[in-house]
Image (tube, rainbow, N blue to C red; front, side, top):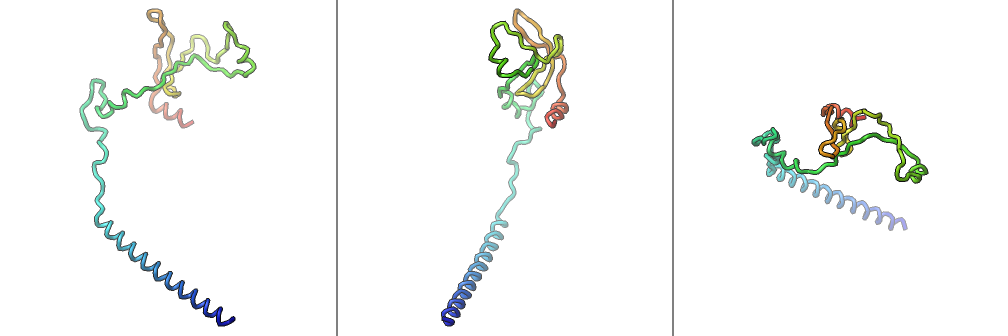
Length: 148
């Protein structure tokens, strides 16, 4: 039985040596392949068009930005907000009055995709409602509000 264990241990050690030799050979082959590929690799240049290049359109916008000018966004004019319990919401009927947090005569918020961009006041032109912008939020202020 002792002879079998010694033979088994010897066979296991021989397997480890073969495994280590195979591992070393594979690592050497990988290093050779990596070195060959590194010699053939060229850095990519001019993958993206420069934003500053190109002629300007009538809106003083670079022409390469023209492709995003037709993307639709959701514009919302908000009179005010309120929180209401579902019980009270279910009791609303035609003619019900819902109190909002905005005051009468206070500027309304103009949101684009949920982000405040301006404030304004209601106007009526040819029997249609509109909004006259009275204050436009600067890009720096919009970014500051997003970080809150």
